[in-house]
Length: 519
Image (cartoon, rainbow, N blue to C red; front, top):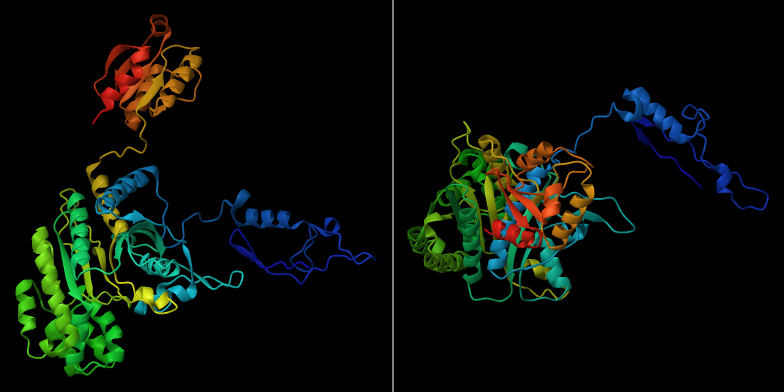
């Protein structure tokens, strides 16, 4: 039995027809060869095969082959041309090199997760999860981040100790802001340490990794804000916030880096149901920021120091700053009580890196991209997936690679710098006609020796055109073989940038190319 649903043809929908019952012969068996292709009955069908009707609809909508269709990527996504991919690969290589330097192993997980795996882990951002229709009995969703899938992976495989990194795309049904590097499909680069460790040692290493990456990429001045969920919960408790409203209040405080305190207070009172007095009391704390001196001051606070959670958080924060001092990075660290990180699964230290000022002399206005890294401790997340509730303490960081990429992209565009999109080292060229066989033989020798080589796909290309291709694409060397070179058993090796040529014996060509390409 066949059912034709709505068919999108060049932006026009053909309404579904009634059920089509294939003719049944006397024996009761269906002959699909005789009933396909079906004819559409009623106002939709005109006796022609379905494919012909679809093509006709496309033509009437704007020309043959559907040329009237608007060709674009979905909202919040984009194509990446070769220059973008080359720049992004360079960026990812720098990040991954740092992760490997700290001893992490790579894993990969499916882009699809069970819907129940993701729900209830992201606070108010749960509404941004892309849910999929029932597929074969499973309710699925596209992954929102790489942290929850990692926790599921640990629980499913009963792993209690691991240092891993993961670079992959995630998906959020957010309002995109492409000029700020915010998309619905984007890469995340995560580094996490799972397992029982002494307090704040792995947490300090995560902050050191953020500092190393942002310093290596030379993005300009940056600040890494740190806080602790236990301190925030302690503040909420002494300010009279019911424990049932801790997470929602946390999500509101998390907006302080985007909107003024008055708007945050208005949301606390109007939407979250807090009293104006409680909101004002919270405001006295969450607008504080500093370093060890602020930690010491809060440890002496008559009310906050009496709260068990806050006292534990402040003690660990003091220890964290001692380790960060040993790493020599406290100049870029700020203890900031406004930092909340709205995700439900954080249980301890949280942090976020922001660029302070975009150093770019070529652009009139700085590129504003928001935070470029974030993370924290999530000791209870793995236990949510374990049948027996066994917890595996974890701490990790995620690098906002797309936002960093938007900065580098703007810089390259403003400077007019040309990005190489290939890694070709040598172009094999010929100066005369009828030498295709010589080119093919030489390029095969170079490929077999591991040399990255190209040639033009013409039998008799002009030498000037071949050399111009080298200059246009940034190929550093050209290996030229003509009739005289074949007779003498040499290859003319040309330095494209210097426009200098020298004859190299054929048997020594590979060694000479390698010598010239040494860094």
